[in-house]
Image 1 (cartoon, helix red, strand yellow):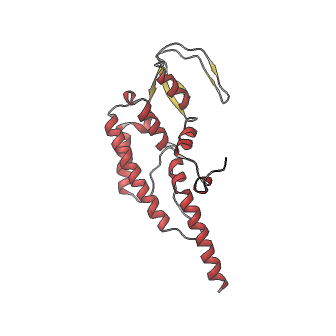
Image 2: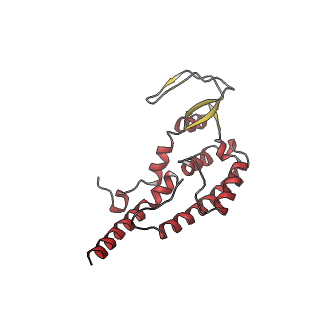
Image 3: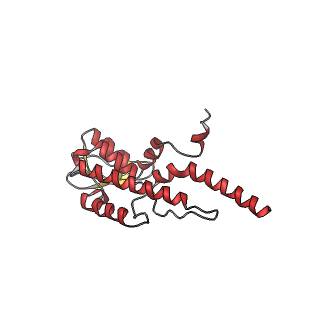
Length: 183
């Protein structure tokens, strides 16, 4: 099946979220589980209350089955997010975030709000950070030249969102430069 032209150069948000499922996160199993051989790794025997590192997709499934509690990543802690929010608001550069921060945060907020302290405040701060970063990305695209664009520390979803616009902008800039060089 052919995709519409606007979707050929990018992933859908759901596809980017699906890819985030391969990131590893910590869980605390609520029951003993046997070793689990996966294609990418083997998950050792899980015994409560010992933490275990598993792919996010597995953590979400075990949470859904009430067989584990998800330990939110350190960056999703309220004090860390408040610090990141201050950085995003104060400096012109993008603050260092995990590459899949947006989709991981979304998945965890949706699937395990009971495992996250101050979940509503965390949700609000993540939204504020996202809006600040979108504003910086727009400003960065406005300042683009034909040679490069410096938008360091962007996450996967953020790159995916600006990819079509960036590609079209760079193509047009190349044409303008070629025409000006020919004259």
